Image 1 (tube, rainbow, N blue to C red):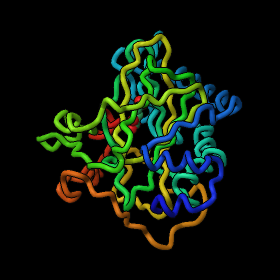
Image 2 (cartoon, rainbow, N blue to C red; image 1 turned 180 degrees about the horizontal axis):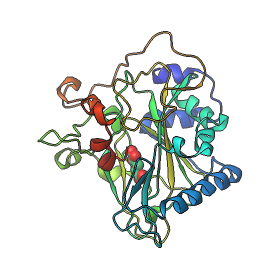
Image 3 (cartoon, helix red, strand yellow; image 1 turned 30 degrees about the vertical axis):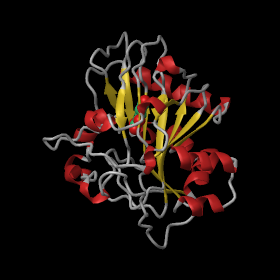
Image 4 (tube, helix red, strand yellow; image 1 turned 180 degrees about the vertical axis):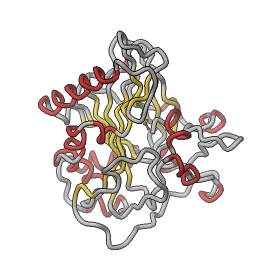
Length: 305
Ligand SMILES: O=C(O)CCC(=O)C(=O)O
C-alpha cells in the first residue's frame, strides 16, 4: 500500500489530519488511546514477568537481563518475543482497537510481524541510539510500522521514544560498521547530517500509543528517573508488504494476518529517493546472513529488536 491508497479509505479511529501527519512526520502519538481496563491487564503481565525473572542469573530466550539483575533487585531490559510469553500479550496484539489504529495507517489488510516489551528500568535504563527499523526487517514496501504503548506515564525524564520528523523520506542508512558487524544504529558521521535539533520526544500519559514508520530515524535517551518506562512494541505491516528476510526475533504469530485478506499481489514500493546516495548503494539489512541464529545474536542488543 502507498500512502495515497491508505489515505483514500475512510479512517476507522484517527481523523484524516492525524493520518496525514503520520505520513508527513513518520510518527504519530495518540495520547491515552489504550484505556484503563487493558492497562490493568498489561501491567498484571509485567508484574508476573518481573516475578518470573527473579531466580534467573543470565539472559535467555525470553528475558534480556541487565548485568546487575538479581532476585532482590530485578533489572530486565526486555521481554523478547512478547506475544509468545503470555497469552494476554497476543490477545492485545490482535485486539480490534489496536488493529483499527494500525489499519488507519497501513490499509485494510494487516499482518503481525513481531513484538517485545522494553522496560527501560529506573536509575539508568539504557539509551537506544538513533536508528531506522526497516534495515532489521526489510519488506517489499514501507507500509510497516511499530505500535508502541506506554504502560505508565512517560515524560522526558523516563527516556521516551524520540523521532526526527521527515527522516522516513530520506536516506536508508548503513547500520553495519566498517568490519561488517551489525550495529543497529546510524553511524556518527551520518547522524551529523541529520536535523537532530528538530527531534521530538514522544511523551504521554499511560496508554498513549506511539506509531513509528519503519524508516523514520528514532531512538531514546537513558532513564535516570526513579520509575521504569515499560513500553510494549508490536510491529505490523500491510499484507502486501512481504518480509524479505526472516524476522530477527520471530514469534509463533509472525506473518499472521490480524485483519482482512491475504494480498493477491505483493507490492514493491516506490521508495522515496534518498537525497544523497542512490538507494542501491547502501547495504540493505540482509539479516538473512544471520538466519542460522534467527538474527538474534547480531541484532538484538543495539537495534532494540
Ligand atoms: O525502547 C526504546 O526506547 C526504543 C525502542 C526502539 O526504538 C526500537 O526497538 O526500535
